[in-house]
Amino acid sequence: MKITSKTRSKVFELANKLAPKMDGDKSAAFVQAWAIVKAGGLEIAVKGVTIGNRQEALRRLASYNPGQVKAVLVPEPANPADKNAVAVMVAIQGGHGLFRLGYVPRNLAPVVSAMRGQLPAVRIVSGTWGVCSKTTYGARVALGV
Image (cartoon, rainbow, N blue to C red; front, side):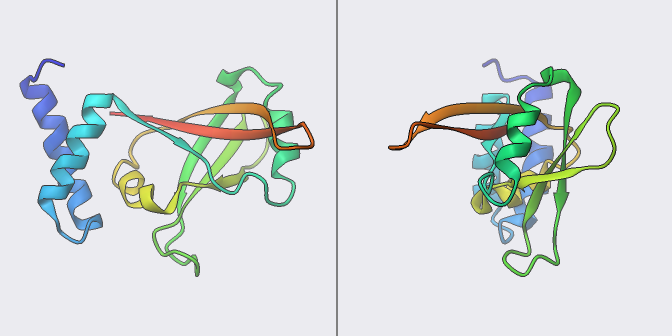
């Protein structure tokens, strides 16, 4: 990756947003920001997709064209389990309302909160795991820089 003034600007902007979320540790924030910018963004596995009726929702979402499924990241500062929690909500283009698909992993929530201006892309994945050979669905969200 060629380091340009535009690249440096992205790193500085992201690091300055990350530092407060990382207890003011600017050094760690710059390391994290460089890694994210070099990679072109983040792709994160959504946690909690096996709770409640989320597997059925993912099965249905998998039948849509990926361009029709929109994701929104919603911070939940009042969440009793984690004040930094970020919910992953999805909607179908032309549909009504949002559905909580799951959460950003706890260790990445502060980073994602700092990148909140980005509109994430969502990708539904499926596979067969375990002894029962049952198809299980998952989701990944991607944030560019």
